[in-house]
Image (cartoon, rainbow, N blue to C red; front, side, top):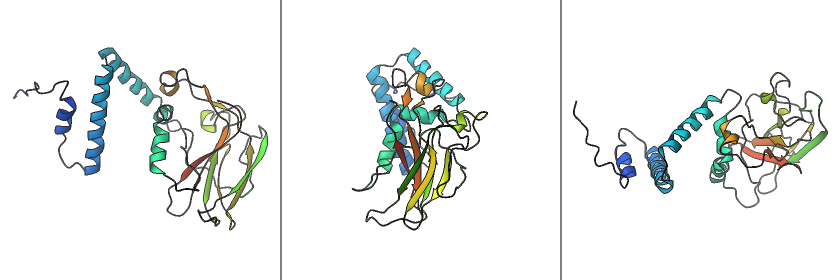
Length: 243
């Protein structure tokens, strides 16, 4: 077997060498992304002078992050949230015009399959917590009502946990539901007043990167709406309390 000369791979030329090996039918967009990632990753290693022990720790950290993921828990999303990447991606992809409601991320506890409910229904299925009314209107930038906009909502229970965190305690889709706006753009539903909920502390998203930060998030109900071919937009209805 012919021996490959690696002498040209140096600390100074590392990123250039790796990017130069990118071949095959690579799309221009993928090439742009991979080239930038390699450049920034190599620059990071050089800037902090990463040790071998720290490199091994990082590999183990990412391995554990993947191992804790399941059908109802995405630890990589929580990690992305803790690092601020989720919010940045949302900001880059949903630059809103003046007058539009600012969007936010869905968070790690959004799940598909919530049932569509009638206007005014109560999404709290276990009867626990302080009931309150959520209502509003979905309008376009000219102030015209949008009929048939889909509103998907979800929140924690009175103890700060989502149904997917307590599948043996809470009924399925507790504090979740989908509604559609009427001709006047209005929506309304009942639910509980959310409480501050803890960041899961048994995974990498909290224990390592999130260490030293606020242990809980502000109480709030999550929602997103979509209409026609528009990409779903995420929002939070926050209450006082929490951190």
